[in-house]
Length: 294
View 1 (cartoon, one colour):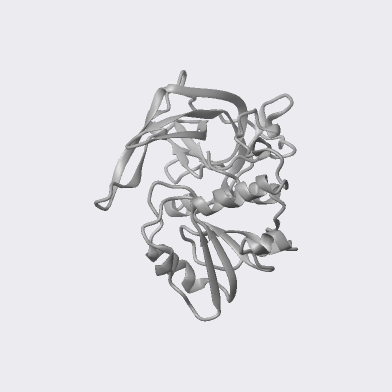
View 2 (cartoon, helix red, strand yellow):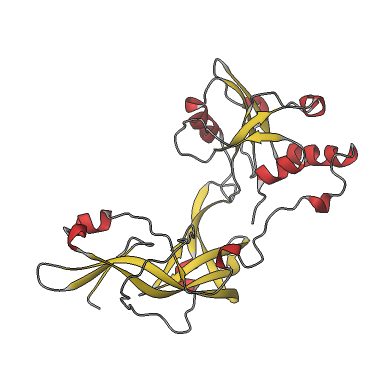
């Protein structure tokens, strides 16, 4: 996994306000925070009070001028710092500009130099103290005795597309198994990944996992659970990869032999209904999928 830049910056003594993000269109560049209480030492490194700090995030596709220009179109007036965590296809001297926006770009070597300077001046005692969370331990939200009830998305758009009325449905809970899967994606390069996978009438990748503090007292509706599941099909993915001749879509295949998993018994909030032909359907409140013919 990549660096948690907010945690790293704070470990280096940089004060970041992570509330009230500027309004910008979704893109490769995302907001980290706003600089507060800039020290004289950090000022010498180019940091400015009130500066908005952004990141390109990590990825295989390099950051190009189009990505910078798209972000700059929405960027508010003031000072901005973009920390680039991936390769760049342009020189810093060619960076775009816009009236009222003062842009600094830190490539990977500049960030490394900033961390190294903190080590040399004694503000960071040892590099190993940069505690970048790897989530290698069991998340605390699963402490205690299960089953654990997942928090639903409350997205009923799949029902609307099918013409089903959620107001006529009954809330239920679906017993399921949630896996925390680690392993290797093998493509043009290798990537170590951590994914949440829900085993509930098929395997489904879950982006974020949240739990309800209290599980509602509801009837259980059972859907099929795969025995001894494998994850190659659900975790393999296509990504953009630049080979120097342009960006191409390439497959990253999940290496099943590298797989490690931790499983949790969970309950999935859902809604159960009947269609006009008398057939049952169930809306999975976590994946948003509608299950029928079960």
